[in-house]
Length: 331
Image (cartoon, rainbow, N blue to C red):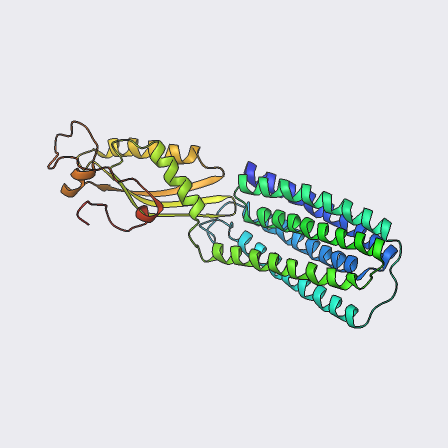
């Protein structure tokens, strides 16, 4: 495993262990109170554990190096993991809504020891948020969708827990126990919304949907370090899967450069990209020789083969570097 992959895997093991502990805490809270709202939170924790275990396995697979059967590596398993986690979360939300509606129509009886239940649920919510916060931060740093998805899920649990605790406090002081079902319904809807959002992100990754933030970061990096030998950049495809990044691009350079000169300039280009992005990155950059119409956008000084005067520098942006043709002022 590479260092980022090892970090992701180790952190996910912590997530799973803490998830089991929090499940035990929530189960205790439900046993003490008999609250259907707390029960739904407990059921959702079971989904957390199952999703966490699958994410752990996916991080193990994604860290494996590419091989004959998987020439691009195993990183896309993280998208599948996130999709399954989203589906499980959505399913849990549906179960919660069903149980809440049934309890509203057929009340299950009195609720007990809400004070202890409130303390236990609030404590579990706090731990969830801290764990989710660090999971998202580490996942973004190491380009791990599985870790980010799990972290966002844990954080959304906390937001739901805040609402749950507020509702439990209201019940404690008002004794309006019908609020138990209402809280559970709201809790279920929030969970479904979270699950569908995770599914959407995972599908985007599986379908290689363009990541605007990633491409914009690439544009900003290259514009900052741009030099006169990079005449044009086009046909860019930049995607991430797991902790891996893959860049395809066409870079236009002076046509009269020798192979050695072009290789030196290309190495500089690749070094800049590598230094400004976390995680493993592979690049396939095709070098195009400049053409006569390139002179008008070429800033190279003292070019011995210039046909036309320089007129305008084309600023690179996501909208134009993805085009599959050289840039020209006449197009």
